[in-house]
Every structure is written in structure tokens, then in C-alpha cells.
Image (cartoon, rainbow, N blue to C red; front, top):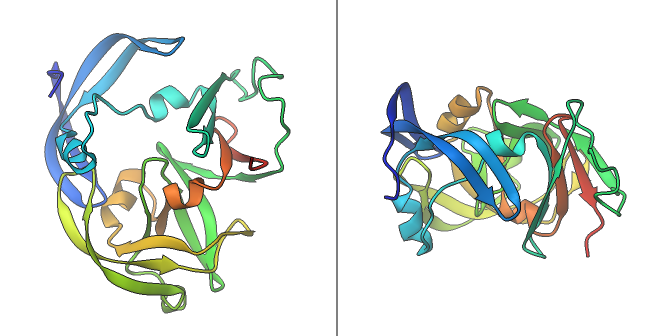
Length: 236
């Protein structure tokens, strides 16, 4: 709604967890100014976000993603409504070692699947690959997971799921209990049961679920893409 694309990207379509098939364009951005951060010479994809704007009743000019965050250590603190970016050297260590006064209380490794953070999870002794998505309002679970996993899923109702591909699909909404993320226990979390084939295609690896706001809300997490590690700070 705000920008026109310069070049149509051949072979690229707008997809999300609910599918999609819209054309994507690219545009050169001279400089993105974000608070006191200046990011020159970016290339952005130009596509429709109107379906997300309508669903959330908010105007969204764009989405900042991996291509910006990969050079920084990113603190996500939902409780304080705070994002802190710390510049990293080529080995993934902070240029300013005193940027955080707190020491992490825990950490874990992750797999970088293209632009996505993929964690090792477990439910009822079944191993799962879980994609960490800071923009997901609710957790997702693939409909084809083991029956042992589904025993921990309590169905509450049917709802419509809206993704980046603009399509709506009807899915089962409920709660998932007994989730371990690399041996870290989680509270019972609101979860949707759906088809994650398109997300697996986007990430280039099979994923069994998505951890979003439900997982992130009670935690203070630092993402380091270069070292492929998550660090956890003590909750406030």
C-alpha cells in the first residue's frame, strides 16, 4: 500500500503457514533509520501486508527480519516491550562486552534453517523440531505429529488461521502440555493444530511446530544468529 516494487522476483511467491501464491517484488532502500540505528543500502521485498493490517487493525509499513538482525545480538523482552540490538564482530561476539550487565542464566544451541531459528523440542518422549517465530501470536503444531504428542493436545474449538500468504484456513485450537525445549520445561501453552508443509518448504527443513508469543512472553531471550545460540536472562 505504501511502496511500489522495482523488479519482480522470478520464481518467488508470497507464502506463509496457510499457503499463498502472490507475486513478490524487490526494492532498493537507501537508508532505513530505526531509532538511532542507520542501515544503508538494504534490499526489501515488496508484497501485500493488508490482510495482517486488517486482522490487527493497525497500519504496518513493513517487517524487519533476519537480513537486519543477523549482524546483531537481539534481546527480546516482551514484558518490558523492549528490543535491544548489540553489534557483533565476525565471530559473533559483542564489540561492547559490557552491553549487558546481566549474565545469562541458561543457554541452548539452535539450527539455522535459512532465516529461521529451529530448536529441539520434546513432548511425551517424542522429539520435535520447533521453529521460533517472534511474530507468531500463538503456537502451532503440525497435524502429522506422533499420536503420543497429540495425547498432550487438548482441543477447545475451531478457529480461522491467517498467515503471511493471505489465505485463511480452519484449524483446531487448544492447549499443549508437557513441552520440553532442549530439556527446559514449559507451561501449558495455547496451540493451533494445522498443516506446516508450507512452512517446512520455506525453511528448507521439516518442522513439527512453531513457538511464538506463548513461549516468548514469560522469558527474556537473547538471539545470537552468528553463534547459533539462545541466551536466557533472569525474568524480572
